[in-house]
Image 1: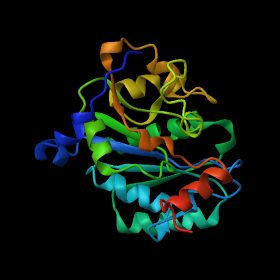
Image 2: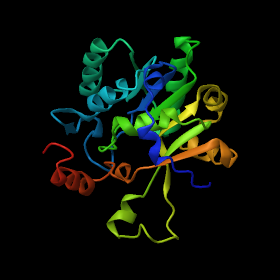
Image 3: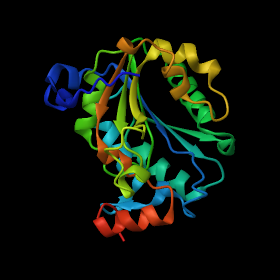
Length: 240
């Protein structure tokens, strides 16, 4: 996959493109946080649960609908999302009863919900996780204004940053979430999403001129382990 960085994308935020509600958002938030040892959805940032913070961030893009996929049998997460859905009429909550089977099932549930929404205006889908604690709205805007079939985020892994290997040409960057994708293509791929086989392997099959990448190493900082969480709290990115 060739590197096509669009770092200037955040500067080209034409009001007509920001205001045009021609996209949907899927927030994949059904992970069980087994390595972390506590629900990452409920980590606190700026005084509110991380899943709430990310949902409010998604609303800044003015989508047709926001689909949030959460795990089954987690009362506190469900309660938090019910309160949020009452505040934002565009928010739809989907419960994933098979969260242990991998991210692909969550994504399929999200796609099904958007299809049921039956909006003829949706052209792109913005797909987000819940634990990239430094994600901001300029980056989401930059993804959405890209013209390629897929516009994905590009960043280093935690390991690269910890070992200062980011200049090592042998270390591959991560090309992944959040990303914006053509809605029709996403629907075509829906049946191929199984287990841990998510979008990444399908995107790799696209011609390189259909893929845009936006560099943002702030996205390297996700919350998968207690050590990463402790680091984020020391930096003030999450509340103690």
